[in-house]
Image 1 (cartoon, rainbow, N blue to C red):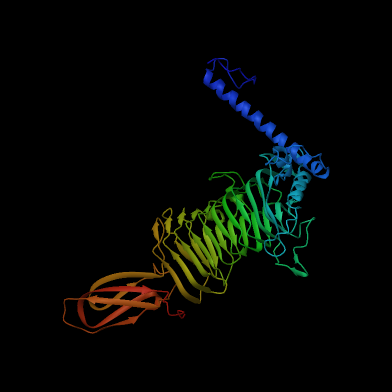
Image 2: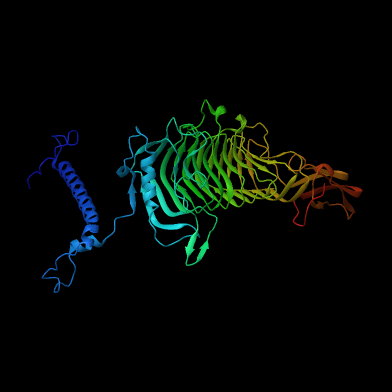
Length: 504
C-alpha cells in the first residue's frame, strides 16, 4: 500500500517519520475536518428551521408514498442544544479584554428559556442548560451573576480572573439576589396560585473552574440557594474568602483546591496569610475532599449540621496564629468532622454542643481547642484520631477557659506521638503495703477536678479486709483499707457519665 499524502502543518510531521505516524496524523486531521463540517451543517439546519417552518413548501410527488420523512426534515424539526459558548458572545479567551458583558449575555440566554417546569417553588427548571467557558482565561471587571429563580444550570470549563478595576467587596461569582441586576421574582404561578420558597436558586453547578480573585475580593458567594454544587474548582488570590455560603441549604463543596497564595507549604510569607478559605454561615452543607493551602482560617463554620470530611488544611500554622477549622457556634455546634488532615493547623470549637471529630490526623502539634464562651460542653466526641508533634508537651486536646456545664463529653481512643494525651476516661494501677492507695489522674484527664464515675478493684493475698473509696478531688482517687496490707489497686475513671451533668 502506498504512503498517504502528507498534510502540510509546520512542526507537526517530520519528513523522516515512518508511514504509521503520517497515517495517524492524516486521520486525526481528517476527523477534525469532518467534525467541523458536521458542526457547521448542524448550525445551518438549525438557523434555517424557523424559515422552513414558516414557509409552506410544495408537496413532493413522493411524499404520499414515502413511508419515512427525509433526513433534512428530521434535522429541521430538531432544536438547538442548550449549551451556550461564551466565545460565541464575544468573550475574549486570552484574558486581554474584559469579558464580563459577553459572559453575562451567555448566562442570560441560558437562563431565559421558559420550560413551564419548576424545581422548588419560585425556581425555574432550565433543563440542565450549560454555560461553557471553552477552556479560556477571561478577565472580568464585575461579578458574574445568575438571574434569581434559575435552577438546573451549569457553568464550567474555564478560568475567570478579576481585573484591577474589580470591586474589592465582591466575589467573582455571586449567587445572590442583592447583587443581581437582572433578577426575576422567585415565585411559582400555577393557575391562580402563587408560591414562593424563599430560595433564590436551586441545583446550580459550578464545575471545572479556576477563579483568580487578584487579591481584589472573594471567589464564590452563595446566598439563600438550595442544592448548589461547587466541584473541581481551583480558587486563589482572594482577599476575603474563597467560598462563602450564607443561609440556604445543602451546598456541596468537593474535590477543590483553595488558597490565598499559590504555595505548597513552608511559604516564607505564611505569617502574613489572611482571609478565610471556606465560610459556612448556613446549615446542612458538605465539604468533601478539599485542600486549603493558604489562608488565615481554613474553614469557618457558623451554621449547624454541616459535614467536613477529607479536608486537608495547611493554610496557616497555629504557631503563626492560624486555624485549620474554626467552629463559631457556641451552644449548638452540630458539626461532624471526619477523616480530615489538620496539618500544623488546629481545630477550635466555641462552647461545643453536639460535635464529632473522628478518624483525623493532626500533624505538627496541631490539636483540638475547646474554647469557653459560656462554659458549656455537651455531647462532644473526640475519638479515634492520630496526633503527631515535636515533643514539646502540647496537649492533643486543650481547654481555653473554664467549663462549668459539662455533659457527655467523650475524649478517648486517640493516639499521640510527641504530644501529651488528654482524655475524659483513664485507668491505672498502683501497688503498695499500707492502708491508703492514691492514684493521680490529673496529668491525663481533660477537665480539672471533675471525676463523675470511679470503678476499682483490689488484689491481695492477705485475708479478707474492708476497704472504701475515700476521695476523688483534684482528679485524684484515694482508697483506704481498715488494716495495713500488701495489695494492688486497679482504678478506672470517667469524666462523662451517661446519666447526667457532672457538678462543679
